[in-house]
Image (cartoon, rainbow, N blue to C red; front, side):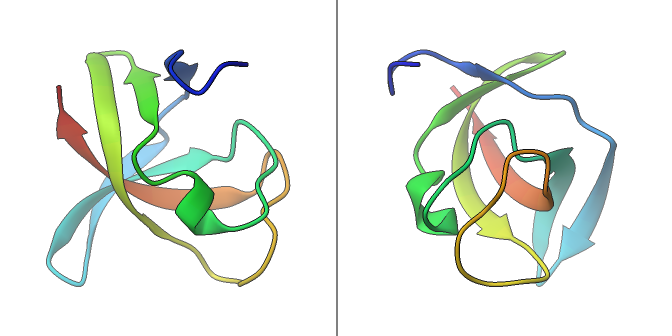
Length: 75
């Protein structure tokens, strides 16, 4: 998957975390680190968004399907 292609994700729910409005998703791809996902474009049901931040329970590599929260901005 090219980095410029939007990544399709499914939102489970929205929540607040440290003053941010987050969306709970499952990681659509494996990543070496959460910072690899920041700046990527994701497609939710309501359109395309840029990932501004990632929040998760653990640290280190992210496995495909792992729950995580993303802060998104509209394009």
